[in-house]
Length: 110
Image (cartoon, rainbow, N blue to C red; front, side):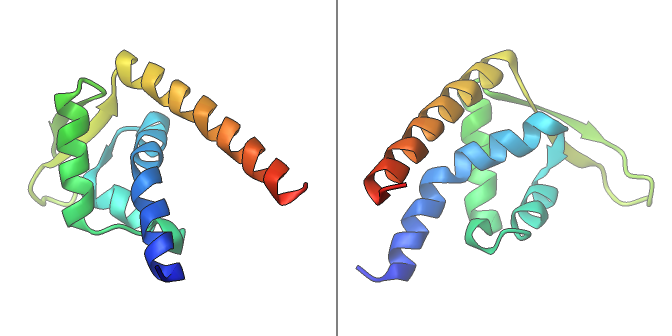
């Protein structure tokens, strides 16, 4: 396995956490999520990753969606917001993430 393949696995494994965390701060539409994630190159994702993830999170009851008109006269955008179940799921994910980071720091010797 190459470092790039390893980074890809890390990205895939953490994408759900990142998407829920971004949506928790404010409702967002798909392309907005993609653009936000591009701010951190290791987290950048394509439409083929984000939209299926959003559909699955909705199916699992962690997100809801609504359509909103744009001020620019463009077609309406589908915004996603987090549900109470999604909030609970995200909190559990952050707890596990914190445990992982602490364990990795201990392994590293920090």
